Length: 104
Image (cartoon, rainbow, N blue to C red; front, side, top):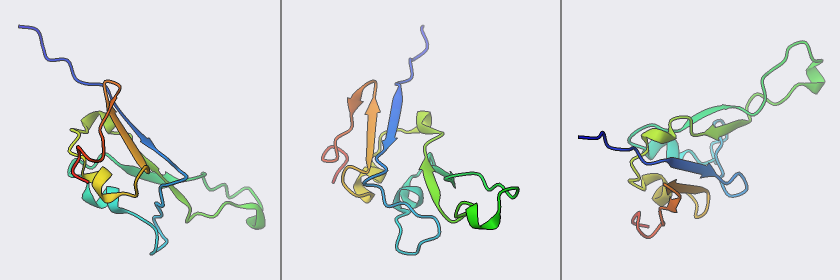
């Protein structure tokens, strides 16, 4: 019996529509909070470089949303329902999960 082939999952974050902010209280964190499989992660936009003069350093409070564990996504759609429309796109083997199919 051949092993089951795992679907190719791709999750895209639309940075223009995603309002993720780790430190801003008005920023969105819903996908991170709601995902039962914890596929989302965060990191600073840029690495802090202490060799750069203080006035030229990047703001350490500006972080970005990542999906390093997207292959664990089961397509439940919780993040699609929780996030702003169009902020996230999820495809399984190239077929998009629609917000309506995810229960929005």
